[in-house]
Length: 154
Image (cartoon, rainbow, N blue to C red; front, top):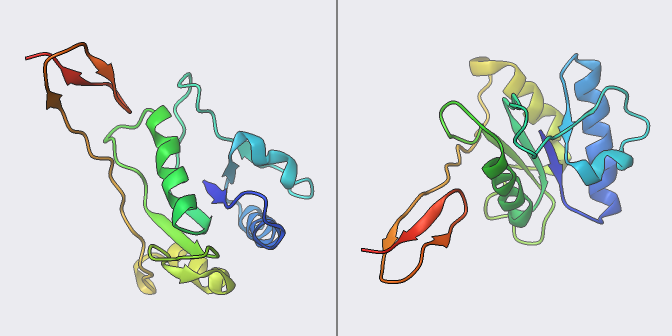
């Protein structure tokens, strides 16, 4: 899954370059619904189905942008049915303003992806992200949470 920062030409240019490279390696690239039009030169890109009707097989999230882009990627997974409820490993290519969660600078995307695809021969730090689930017991009606009802009357 290739997720990128919105409305940024420099980020889009690198994202297209990454997508072309991944497709040339035979890797299926999935992008967000509203981002497909930004990859006109890349054949074979799929759109992420967040309707819940299909099971998406996402093995790696490539987040190109900043911390907010990674948080957006995490949010997308609330719609997807997964076996273990974990979000796949995230390779965060930093191009945002903060970059606290960035794994690798975006300029080094190719060596980072070569390391990721090479497996344990040349490890690269990938972050495993999980979604926390909490329940608050309080008087009152049930209020809908992120994934399921999260506030229950006592």
